[in-house]
Image (tube, rainbow, N blue to C red; front, side):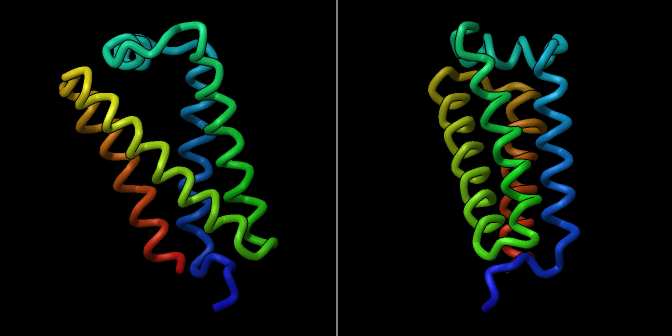
Length: 117
C-alpha cells in the first residue's frame, strides 16, 4: 500500500465539491442558511465550516503527492459529515437538505475513501 489515492480522480472530485461548498458558504444561499439555522449552528461559528472544508480540500489535493495526507483528509471529511448527520438528527431537521446535502456528501466521501484505497 502506497497511501496515495489510486485512482486519483475521485479524490479531486471530492476536493472540488468541498471547495465549491466552502466558496458558496462565504455568502450562503438560502438552502445553506436554512440548513445551518435548522440544526441550530451558531451564526458566529459559520466561518469555521468554511475553514474546515477548505483545509480538507487542500489536504485531499496535497495527498496526491504526500503519502497518507489524502487518506487522513478523506477520513476527516467522513467524520465531519457524520457529525453533521448527528446534528441533523438531534435537531430533528430531516428535510431535503439532510437527505441530499448532508447524506449525499457523506456518501460521496465514503465512496471516495473506499475506491481510493
